[in-house]
Image (cartoon, rainbow, N blue to C red):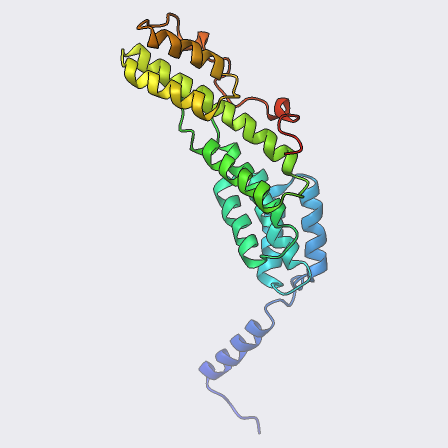
Length: 243
């Protein structure tokens, strides 16, 4: 004779079987090498949003695979190329902390500096990005003096310093416009002392000399500042080479 089970027991058994075979009828999970191959292809095609999702899948599903280290770094790269610089900085620093002796750390540090560099706007805005970029590029030069990123780091430092010099000149002009000559002179001295090789230094010295004579220079800041944005770093490529 067949034994009749209560309906609630039959329902429970069926539910257990269905949940245990949830993948049945769908595609089974892909292996790590297949996910990695697609992620690399999407990244190479510039499809960074899709690549980011795939690299994150690699990290989540295969954290101990031979692809995990690559995926960890590429997640940071995807954020960088998507313009998500805050997320990229976090990801690059996490990579450095997790792999302190890895040869890619010089690259990761360079990219952190580049994230700050990308935050540089115009001379009338907060210059924090330029200061942070200079600090990290300088640390890169000290920590990895033989890395292939040194020459570019030096050139970008020069570009950022020129930007900061123009920022100081802009602020000095604002003080001059509001007849705060003492404050203007202070910013000009700071410029000359800290950025003596910048393109803005000669103009700062000229204006400072007029102020020391008790005269106020004429003209607008547009007459004094050649660039309101970040100068092209490539024009500084040979400056400081071999340091």
